[in-house]
Length: 390
Image 1 (cartoon, rainbow, N blue to C red):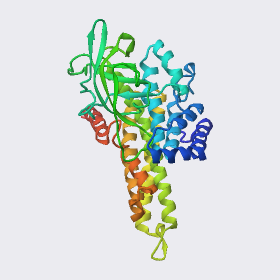
Image 2 (image 1 turned 120 degrees about the vertical axis):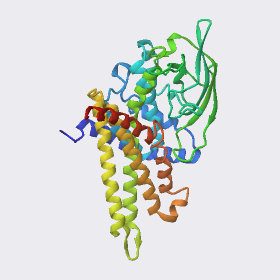
Image 3 (image 1 turned 90 degrees about the vertical axis):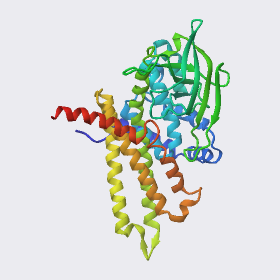
Image 4 (image 1 turned 60 degrees about the vertical axis):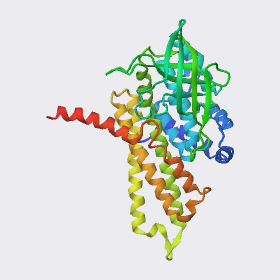
């Protein structure tokens, strides 16, 4: 059993570190913090580094990385900027992945090369108002009329929808029944010139500046059979399959930011003098950090294990990715809050790094299935295991 990264993976990570720590990238991060805008220049440069098609096959111009390769890269990018890592994550694991995994050859050839180059940006749209964790219960529908499928509905909290050109959208095509959610995945062109698509809102957010969280309406958006991704009435396979894959990447985000918060906390407590000695010499505080170091390392190993299992096609990889998503989400939340506490009154300032990292951390245990959903997935599995032990 080898726990070390390969030379190729180390090179990928070093590339990501160099790119993210570069002076120009740091300026883009600072600009996004100030103006809350989308970092188009950053994404253009990310495309040049092969970061917008990490797992996409070389046949379509992608880098052809393994899942583990890509996860280590996302972790490093998130160390420097969670929102910038989210923009790259959405392009890779939420947009390109379902297209390559479930799409027709025509769909893949049409979209993937342009997504890899950054000419097209993608998004993934299942969430609706009132439909969060109950992801099967969407009300957006596809109605047949004159040989076409009219998409009608409202999507909320869709990352990158305001800048995307293409969307993986889910709509109801039959009633929900036991064992059949009755949804279908559609691959559609969106944007201000797309008839039937209307962007209604870009959320004003606390934290994760530089990633766009959006609402949009589909008002008789005209689609047909060529827009179906996967099979009719089997959209849940696309949705769930994408979530299972993408949770590894969210876990990597959590691991990256948790490492950053720990590093920043260590720098601070080594320099901060109270009662005549550095804070790090306070045993109670030191024990807190030691426990967090253990928790973060364990969560990282779960993340790598989940990615490895997906690469070798272990049928239960999704259980490990749920464990990783839970572990990293909880670890980053706790570590960011500790750093915030250690910095005391300085953390109240909106310009403080401690407040920024905390606000960036808090959504990680929520999106792509909150911690409670991961526990539910694992609980259901343990119920099945328990039956075999009787």
